[in-house]
Structures are given as structure tokens and as C-alpha cells.
Amino acid sequence: MAADAAGAEPAAGEKERGKRAALSFAAVALVLGLPLWWKTTETYRASLPYAGISALGSLRFQLTVPVSVVFAKGTLPGAQQRRLPLADTREEEILLNRKPSVTSCYEMTYRSATATEQAALTMATVQEADAALLLLQEDLLGSLTVYVIPETSPLLPQGIGVYIGKHRSAVMRGTQGPGDVLAAISARVQQIVQAMSFTTDSITTALSDRVPMDQLGTDTRRPFKSSLGYEITFSLLNPDPKSHDVHWDIEAAVNSYVQPFLDKLGSVANFSVDSQILYYAVLGVSPRFDKASSSFILSALSLPHVINPVEARLGSSATSLYPVLNFLLYVPERVHSPLYIQDKDGAAVGTNAFHSPRWGGIMVYNIDHPAPDKAPLLLRVDVDMVRVMEVFLAQLRLLFGISQVPLPEEFLLESPGNNGLTDWELDRLLWTRTVENIATVSTTLTSLAQLLDKIGNIVIKDDVASEVYHAVASAQTAMLELASGHLGSAFQASKEAVTSSERAFFDPSLLHLLYFPDDQKFAIYIPLFLPMAVPILLSLVKILREAKQSKKEPMKTD
Image 1: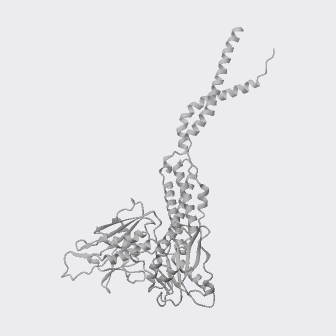
Image 2 (image 1 turned 180 degrees about the vertical axis):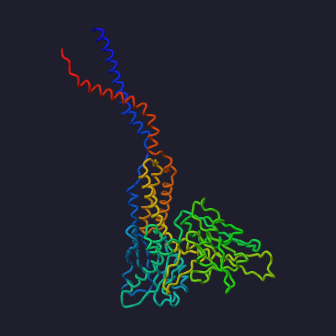
């Protein structure tokens, strides 16, 4: 009996130590191992400004235009002249849909002309007056100045009531009458300001992705989308090099006509210009011969089929970081010459050119061929680059959304000159591009937030979160600057917002294929943890079973 008792005590002690060891292993695995494994394998996700992104998606714009109305002597009656200076604010909502909403705000200040301004308004021609007044203005982006002269002033030509110059000012005739002359002039000034700043069509074009299709005009899809840069390519297509030796001085033409236009747009985007000559490049469409005119015709229905065959020879734009604008000069081969383009009504197009929205333009350049018996084997052709560049520059303006607004007949619009762009047209482009940039940032960040919310195992690094925060802050700054009438700073902030949002969206670390799905994680970790977990679990089950059994056994008493 004593021996049995002595043998039972070591066995009981050994069992007790086994229980403690199993509990210790389980405690270490649960208290230390499991949290450590969870912490070291969790996906790091920096916080993002989801509330700011959601608020940015509402897109409630207020576009403020500072307008200064300057009255020359003799324009207003004495009683109304003494009311100057004064200020007035007029707001007008641009109806698009519930989201986004755009409100135009015209902050008008009325004052009398200074002595130097009065002297400028008495010059011989309105062009000279416009040049002299430019030196007296602050010339801020987005601001406008309207000079009101007496109705009998000889500054404006006969029959002209409003002159819109190349800069940010206009000259208009005043009106005389028994009523409130100032109120009548104010209504006319607002019409001028709306023509020189942004219009409903331009804002609708900028927000075309968020506006119902029935509210979009036919020209809404024509301009290129806002981008940080553009590549412009001029191509000379010579399908018959055996008959035509074509020469074009494209470098001098670009420097004289295109480069001043691009310099004017330097604050909008970066531009690169190149050129090329393609031989044996045909349009891919057989023109129709017209016996009445002894010429070949390209109808409007065949023009869409011209671009694809030619584009294959232009070189792929897939490697380009920015949108590519293509301008093609096509010299028809001898057997298809002369070649003319017809519009939808069957009338000949005066420029003999057409453009394709968000792609570029093509011009057909016909050659005067001598009689067959006097024609040389190889005819030298010197392209008239003045005529060609006038067409390409007009197409370039249309592709950037710079088009003339229909104006009354009494409005005299000054030509932009060699720059190809007036200051107020540049401001209009900046208004639309700023609004478009903010809308693009909102769309990009909303898509990114939805992607990261849907796929929870993508790592969000600190630099990505920093770009998102910067994009939201810059977009909010741009909207505040628009409401304050600071167009230049608003546009720069919108460009920074676009840059940051694109950096965040296209960050390589956000590629979903870099991370394992949850089922693959289980397939990796189960072979590692299962051999360790099974003995511990079995030991815990055995300990619990013995504990329950010991409670059921009756207590022995002596």
C-alpha cells in the first residue's frame, strides 16, 4: 500500500506539470503570439480625408468676376455723377442640375475717369485709346474694365455701340434719356461682361461629364480635356513623291504663327511641337469625280473614314504622356487633283479643311499643274505657309474651346493679332479649365476612395495619403479663390490639385495584384500554425474534460 501511494504521487505531479505546461503554451500563444502575428501581418492603411472628398463632390462653384465701370465726362447727368463711386454685386445661377451648381457673381464698381484715362478716351482711334488705357489698368487675370463714353463721342465708328479690345477692357457708348441712365448702362455692361468672361456653354463644356446629355450642345465634345501638357504634331502627307517635290518651311511658320499662341497659353499647360513628312501616305478614301467642275470631291459622309488609315502612319500616341493634337497637310496625288471637301449641304468648304473633335485637323492643299506636255517629271511645290497656318491656328483655337460668342451687330471685336488669342479669351479659358480641373479632382479622389474602401488589403502609404490631403486642400483653395475673384491663384491651385490626385491614384503601391486575397493567406498560414495549434488544443480539451470529471466524483472523507 505504501509503495502504491509513493508511485501515485510522482504520477500526479507529472500530470500536474503537463497541465501547467499546456496552459503556459496556450497562454503564450494567445496573449503574446497571436497579437504579435496580427500586428506584424496587418495591412498598413494611412487615414484619408473621406469627409473632405465627399464634401468636394458636391461641386458648388461661385465664379466671381471683378468689373470696373469707368464713366467719362459728360456720360451721366450731374445728379447721378455725384453718386459715384459706388459698388454693386449681381448674382446669377447657371442652371445645370442639382449637382454641380454654378453661381456667377459680378462685383461691379462704378467710378469717374481719371485725368489720364480721360485723355486716352479722346484719342483719334479706339485702338490707340485701348493701347493707352492698358498702361493704366492693373490687368489682373479675370478682371474686366468697361469704359463708358458719351453717346456723341467720335471715338467709336458710326453705328458701333461697343468695342471689345485685345486686352481686358471694352468701350461702350452711353445713353441719354429722362430715366435712370445708370441702371440702363449697368444692364448693358452686364451683357458685355458675360460676353468677355465665361458663358453657360463654356461652363457646361467644362462639366460635360456631370451634365445630362440633353443639356449638352453639339460642340461640347470638340475641345480637348484639360491636361497638364499637350503634344502638337504637324505632318506633311505626300502620297505621290515621284510627281511632287513638296517643300514647307514648317519651322519658320511655327515660330511666326503657332509659338506666339502657345506662349500666350504657357500658364495653362506645357506644349511640345514636332513635325514630320510622310511619303506614300494616302487618305484611304477614294474621292468622287465631279464632271461639272472637273475635280474630285470628298463628301462630308466620307470624312470620318479618312482619319483611321492616316493615323496608322502617324506613329502611335500610346507612349505619349499627354494628349496629341495632329495637324495634317495633304497634297493630293496627280490622278486625284484637284481635290475639294464638301460640307453636309454639298457646298465646297472655303478653307478646304476639316477638323475632328479631340484629335486634330486635315487640310487639302491643291497644286496648279501645268499642261501635260509642259509638265516636268518632278514638279517642285513650295507650300504657302501663311494660308496653311491660318487654317491650322483656327483649328487649334477650336480644339482648345476658344470660339467666338455670337454678338450683336453693333459690337466691334478687335482681332487678336499675331498672338492668336486675346487676354479676355485667355481668361475665359482659365475659367473653364479651373472648373474642369476641380471636377476632375473630385472624380479622381471619389473613385480612389471607393476603390480603397472596397479592397481592404491594399496598403495606403503615408506619401499617398499626403498627396490625397494636398489634392483636397488645393481643390478647396481653388474654389475659395474662384469665389474671391482671384482667377490666377485659383487656376494654379487647381493644377496642383490635379497633379496630386493623379499621383495618388496612379501610385504603384495601390496595385491590387501586389497583395494576396484572404483565401490565399489562409492557405499560407494554416500549414504553419496548424501543427503547433493541434497539440495545444488537444491538451486544453483534455484538461477541461478531466476538470469536469473531477467535479462529478464524490468527495472522500475519513
